[in-house]
Length: 69
Image 1 (cartoon, rainbow, N blue to C red):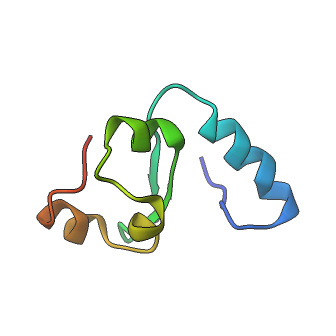
Image 2 (image 1 turned 90 degrees about the horizontal axis):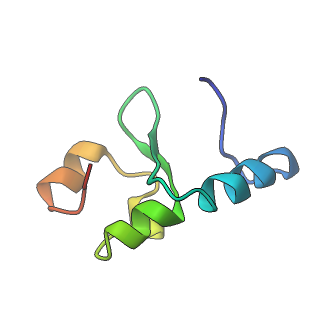
Image 3 (image 1 turned 30 degrees about the horizontal axis):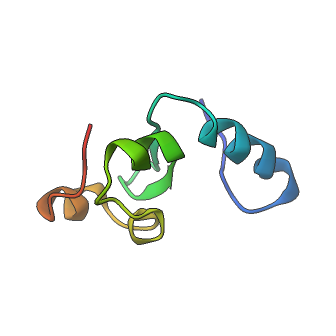
């Protein structure tokens, strides 16, 4: 599935839908850079902070012990 999660009017509904799902969602781009995590992911991983994850490499996050799958 190819779509973006930018902060424009068309994507706001996608973010709201994803944030209201009960299953954790962690989205990366083709380079492994974190683009989105939903509220269910954050609820299951209390040390995770959305603002600190977005834009960061999954490899870096794993090394810090803040990535959970």
